[in-house]
Image (cartoon, rainbow, N blue to C red; front, side, top):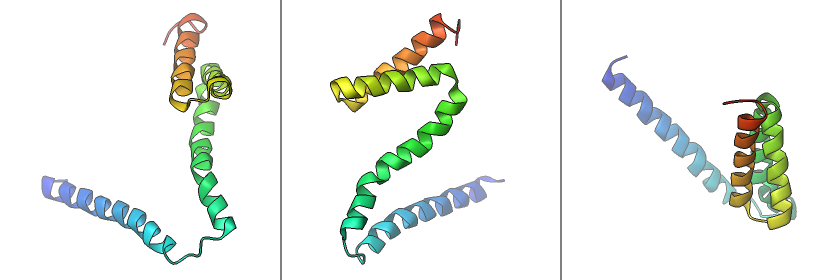
Length: 103
């Protein structure tokens, strides 16, 4: 593939990505904001996060389970998302370093 074709593919992908995002915003302008739609939108981010996280945890082994456990415990105790995630990453790194014996 030459440079012109690569740039054309990148431009097309950019337009499709923008169209899906802008189209969603445009489409939501025509929908009435019922309690059901509002509840769907409120929980959408959490469900996407879980959908991305679960396969990674299942494939990640025991270090991933330790990271999720520490992150959940920290979130319940300190209620700060970023700090909870950082503690989970640190727990996974320490688990891999000291329990599993390396990276």
